Amino acid sequence: MTTIARFVPSSKLPDVGTTIFSVMSALAAEKKAVNLGQGFPDFACDPALPDAVTRAMSDGHNQYPPMAGVAVFREQIAAKISALYVHQYDANSEITITAGATQGILTTLLACVRAGDEVIVIEPAYDSYVPAIQLAGGTPVFVSMNVGEHGYSIPWDQVQSKISDKTRMIMLNSPHNPTGSVLSAADISALTEIVNNTDILIASDEVYEHMVFDGQSHASLARYPELAERSFIISSFGKTYHVTGWKVGYVVAPAALMAEFRKVHQYNVFTVNTPVQYGLAAYMQRPDPYLELPAFYQQKRDMFRQGLENSRFRLLPCAGTYFQCVDYSAISNDSELDFARWLTSEIGVAAIPVSAFYQQPKESGIVRFCFAKQEATLQQAIARLNTL
Image 1 (cartoon, rainbow, N blue to C red):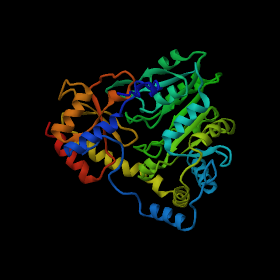
Image 2 (spheres, one colour; image 1 turned 30 degrees about the vertical axis):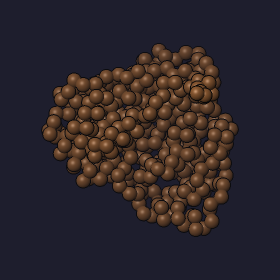
Image 3 (cartoon, rainbow, N blue to C red; image 1 turned 135 degrees about the vertical axis):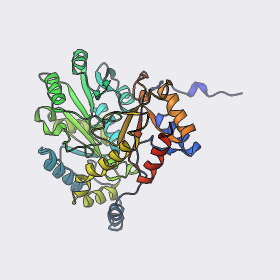
């Protein structure tokens, strides 16, 4: 029998398998569980948004757009950033539209990281960071967040201890997935002190920028000139406008950094869906949808937390994102993955083990729920979780 095994190349990502999100969503579908695992809404976007895209198609915007993105779209993004964070990005040279935030992250790393470079990753971390670093030829260097009664926090002294002459970049994420934590003024001060007088770059994943609660403001790195000058800031319209399947995002950076970004961008994706860009640009003329988003998701957060306040789960603080982490140690001694599987199969509510966000699984007895769901969905989940 002829074998073709010799034609299979050695893997560039030998440790990568199917993501935990796909695994838990498949299990939720099989068990007909309420899926609070994968982070996507189960409700529709504003009908005005797909209507705007339909108009763009009808108006003939169906051919290639400019490589960096439709000009009017980039101008709207520049205006939004200026209004919210008081930083002026040049729409022509400092903003690029991407095929979602994940592509923006990968392109940032491919543009800046070379073999032998080190990239600091603060765990738990979104699962695309490490493979992207490895594909760029870099070495991830891990720092684990502290977790306690007051939730998760970054141990900046440990970050400082990992800095070396090989450190090329620090990966940041705020509001933070999966923990729901946000950067504070003290965090910004510590980060600034670490990178001052170095050539270290920052990749700042800010896709949940419009989900910061309790009257707080998002600490975008765009607000801080000494950080903005060395930062690639990544965001996404999928999270903001409830259209995760559209996979449209953007990256902003100073012109010299963006020039390097675009050299890679033009060959790994070239450009992004034209009518969606025009539709989003038209929709962005009204700031209300993103300005009202914190209150929209805070109401869901509060409802979910209140529904579980008398349960056996210990709820960790949630200052941002649409994720709620809970400590289940009063319920089970199982590993996080086993508990999440049991919860999905036997109780009928899917969750994500936080251990999946570490390169080497770290057990903390914590799982993550997504509350970007309809009220009826959340009420059903709450009722089931309160049986434990």
